[in-house]
Amino acid sequence: MILDYKNIAIHYTVSGKGSAVVLLHGFLETIAMWKYLETELSQNHCVICIDLLGHGKTDCLSYVHTMENMADAVFAVLNHLKIDKAHIIGHSMGGYVALAMAEKQPQLFKGLCLMNSSFEADDKDRKILRARANEMAKTHFETLVEMSFANLFASESRAKFLDELDAALQIALKTPVQGYIAASEGMRQRPDYFETFKNLNADKLIIIGLKDWIINIQKLKAKLINTDIKYEELSEGHMSHIENKSELSYLLNLFVEK
Image (cartoon, rainbow, N blue to C red; front, side, top):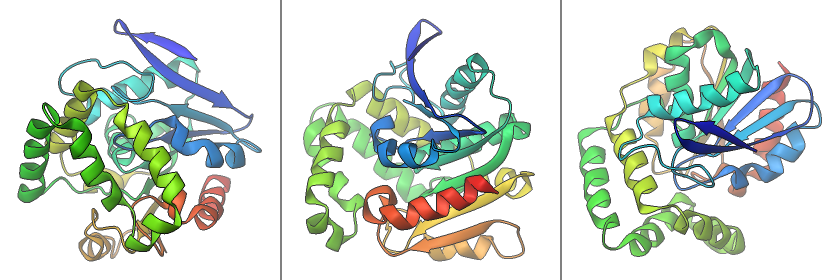
């Protein structure tokens, strides 16, 4: 399905009936990443998957896509579908978008799951890396994506899930360079969302991959002390929907059934 929004097209899908579950993909991903979980969750829920700005079949809106820009595009779809309450699950960048949504419209949330994601802003070193990657993307996009993509998987997973890794990589390589740079710069600019997440009056869950180098796991867990934020640990890396498929499915089904 396509929604006209600010002179661009937003692509989304809707499957199943019941209470709403919104699935937000990560950087260089599309709604294709949710195929298995969409099938599982739509047995008892209305599952909405959205290609975020500059990804999949959704057009670029600008040369910088802030998390707030992304959130507003998601709100446009949900308003169009007349969704006023939902469980929202965001993978990596999708989690950042979900947090921007929680900042703007906390009343929308029945639950928020950060899947291989974090409420923390980029630190100084990470911001420098993103800026360098954005420059490299202008001239060596394919090399950049291929170099960085394998690191999303735990080392053992790269061989075990070789076909799935290659399929995800081919999707990533179809991302327009403008979409890459706009989203990367948006992530670089994003604020710390810890207080927003902590104070959200909804069920809260973080899915942690124990071999995920992108997330500072110990720092993240230390901030969860004395909060009502729950977390679950899975054995592998950043791509839990591939590396820990059955365990993730079990946890997310439990989460949306609360």
